[in-house]
Length: 226
Image 1 (cartoon, rainbow, N blue to C red):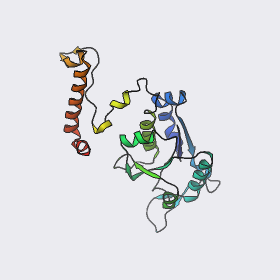
Image 2: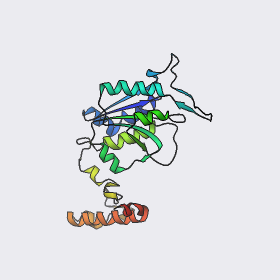
Image 3: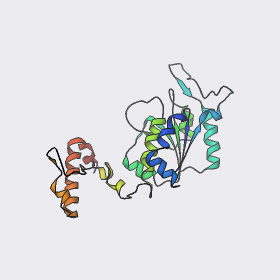
Image 4: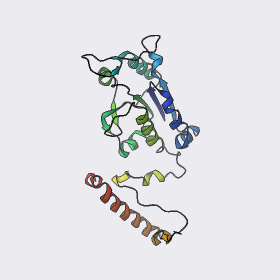
């Protein structure tokens, strides 16, 4: 899988993409992430990619020309399954969307900045708009890191145990059940006996029951979606 990211501050993405699971995915050749400096397509020698908005108002807007040129040049090299704009007013990102996007081959993510991007780019190039939550960040870079991480870990062969992702929170609209590790007892706090029983059927039943309880307590809205 290949993911390209357009950003005015690519340095913000260096650490998330060069460590842990995403680094492992790239080292294995299962994922390729390329971050492009939008200023490469700037309108002048000063690296300008933003301007004042028509109609007045506070905040600069990312210009049409640099974005259009960047998207067209990259699209000539790769056929993108989705061109995604990270924006607070986009579709709410969730596990189902991550699962869906992990099946794609080529994605282009556009990181907004300042007051946003010229609407004409959204109208003529963007195929999907994604928000990671109901709040505003300084730019789309952190949102892009979240999306790439959520997608990358789902690729076959990335996780040591390929079934691990199937039991994450939000798969099947349930939160994950409690987990325990050694020692079996610490300060008098004991691991539930069923987890030590070796009875896999009972363990799975316990985990499902606990997942239901936790979801009902913390995120009852998820159960309404089932």
